[in-house]
Length: 550
Image (cartoon, rainbow, N blue to C red; front, side):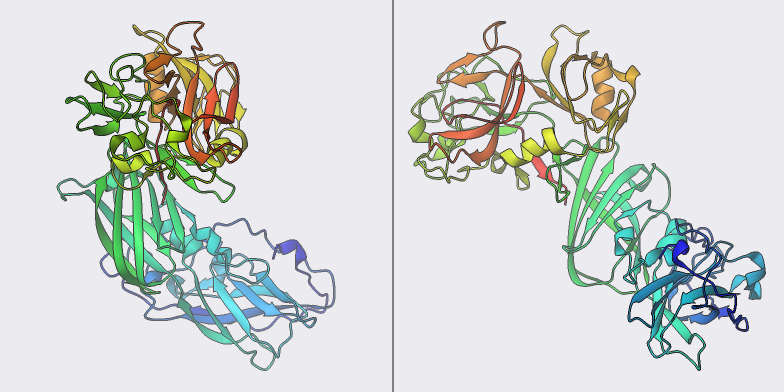
């Protein structure tokens, strides 16, 4: 509850001061940093104005086994100026309320910082009902619930956990009109991570700037500057949980999954993770729906290469984001059965639905057939063989709703050239190179890019230009580039020459067009942007894959 809801009586009773005692605790071998100070947005209480408020002091102590309370260099938790507790109580009207104590002053702290008195004002408390103490106060919501949302975003430091997140609590009954004496118990576990590469030869902890932890129910995201030492994360206790990790270190993304893990409240766990680099995955995150789910893009457009005229194909991504094949072999040498008449690389694929009878590589759209019914005959088709399955597990194709959200609805939180909520820009990149490339820049969530980092046109519009050095810098910030990579009909590629539908791109979604069994949805950019376009399944369009941020 905000402090402006706290009221004070002129007849308020000042109870005798009682003290909060603390116990010296071990940290189980982890490096300890800093003292606790409850830095949160709760305002100082204002002077109460009615006769229904009482000002009291609470007497509480810490559980001696609560090892996560040992958050100072000497292994003893001590109070600091500014610390607060929250008291959750029931008023005489039956309403659950939360009142934050006043901030500790130096005079409130005794016993070498291990004891302190907290003063709190309560409005018409019902002293027949239990009360609950929450420390620190930032972990309590105004309605009396616990603010677990505060755990979703962390900075990886023990000092921040100590000041704002290390949740402990207990409940009890009133004691002859006075607040009860209680022993608080920790309700969270703390993990202290070190990160190494998959073979354990390189410690990457100091270069990790982004880390996501998911136990299937809760997701914790750490954003930090590169720094030495453990990455500390406060989590809710788990029992037999399967936990997935993703970490960004430099320009690379790493993943790890562990099974059947139990982390109990009141403990700190030093954990070493050997994480595997995800080849071809860019670091930028993009929100794709109103639920906040995010994806990362592949390093380039999907490609299939053959050296034996299609008897075998090797699948992968373009080396650079701007690379595309155009009218070179094998885009222009595709036969009707998943083979080619000349060796090369295909990067324009037809959309094949689950109702198609095609098998082999033809089911991935490597065919010159222009008979759309051969690509599927159902408007409810799923994409028969999602192109991501050709490389490794975890890759997929965006739905048309996700593409549309990405371009038109996403609240990116990004600022580019002074424009807030920047999502994209039509652009020409590598303008100082031998061959500039036209296409679309997508700005990741939460990025800030200055006006000096490109020659900007309209953000969420057209006209931007980048030199090769400028694009390299933008890519380093997580930007994605979708090249205008032409399209194919049969074995003929269009859009290569100026005036021949040039400066356009077509990217498939995984969604069929329900109004016509011979069509599927795609993103189109030419003279305008259409994230919910649709075309015949036989057309060969570009494919850009993503992986979900776990």
